[in-house]
Image (cartoon, rainbow, N blue to C red; front, side, top):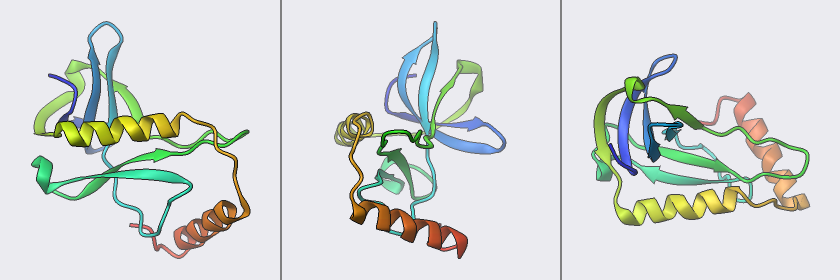
Length: 134
């Protein structure tokens, strides 16, 4: 097992995760592959697309929320053990890993929210209420 591999794990159901670091002592840091957003999330988060190019059975994203003061964003970062890993599904290219590193750095930075960002968040909330996010 190594950084950049994509594995099936069993959480509440079978899901794909990308291994971000492999350390048996503290567990394996991984990020869950989720469905792409159905709306533009720029300013609120970053989606790194993964799919057929990486050997995966479907198109998905790794989603990195951009934090703001007083708000803890939902993330799909998790820690798993070797025993949680069911089957290897693919591997990411070094270019895709660089994209993930950039998104992790951006997600770790505090961001001042502007009125435009707040309006975009409202659009996303409306889309969620109407079932518009995939």
